[in-house]
Image (cartoon, rainbow, N blue to C red):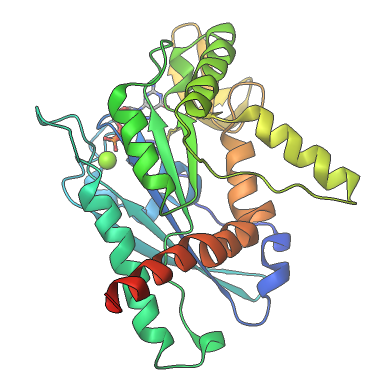
Length: 295
Ligand code: GDP
Ligand code: MG
């Protein structure tokens, strides 16, 4: 039977800024169905986000996601409390008409903003739970050809509401050359279409941080591989996907950007993602809402 890898060893730095009050963080995944969204969030954060009963014999099949589904897990690490919510969404592409297929998702983001707005008027802000969506991973099919029209329209809509980070799904199906060419094509299309994805901050003054941010900028869209099974590579147990010609290792930096993505999410950029959500996306929502109220 396959072993499932938990998410037990969060680095302590994650919590530096939130040692006292704990951390609320919400991540959403969006994209065409079958691209590995459910598998990746399981690999990223915890195997137990889906109950064991949802796995079949081979251990890697996820149930088809048919509705927007939130799962919250509490992680206690070094005495610090992290409340992590993952929002899994049904993939589009299963219906003929995909126009406006982002609607249920942007409406869900809005409803969480609205909840926050209502709570804000009732309680002291510092003591509030923050259930807003802080980051959205947008999954791009590993075709090698570029974005689909639906990707362009979907990301355009999402970018107005949340921090969008594009990822190339199932990167193990591309050669490294194909992958880096594909990344360039995608970034060109993102710029040409005026899609405002999450920007890694400019770290003025801190050279080390600036270099790290440049590296992240260059790696976008992150090429990811998801798997919840453990395979053996020269005597070592690693998370990966087994092929006749070898193993695509999830946590190996030279195989894909999985570790880079996970580190930036939970370690280096969690606070910035929360800040941008609050200062930009939530503010936009609030202003539109208030403008609406006053006519
Ligand atoms: P979702 O519909 O986007 O949630 O996709 P799922 O997570 O349900 O995965 C769909 C299928 O793709 C499953 O059979 C997975 O085992 C497989 N899969 C998931 N991640 C990867 C990956 O990184 N590489 C490859 N080759 N297959 C994957
Ligand atoms: Mg799914």
